[in-house]
Image (cartoon, rainbow, N blue to C red; front, side):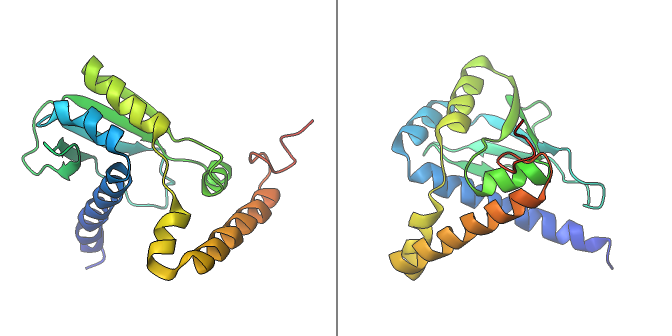
Length: 171
């Protein structure tokens, strides 16, 4: 029974992550324009460096749509056009990412033109958490939630030795 839970949860999680990426892309027309010429191309995305207590994260194959977004590709092309390897952050890096201080570490291999455009997306896309929350709960509440989250991240960062901004990285 418990072994089937990851088989049910992980595909749903992948679908939600693709929706999140598409949400971020849809806020940036230049990003979608960069992806449109790559419609029909497949990208294999895999996470590396997961903690041993987590179940192994399966690679996801996504297809670039004509709209310049992504969708999960169930066909499973034998050789994708591009391979993205995302390095999962350690505790200190995750705290820095919560505060918006760290870009993801990504290794990109494959088609050079598609790789250049994906690299541009990694370097330039930012998720505006406060704006998204403001749409759901209003600007005042969103501001307070983000402010509290940043304060919590700063407090936690001070407890993690070697985390960026923790004080332990200063000499």
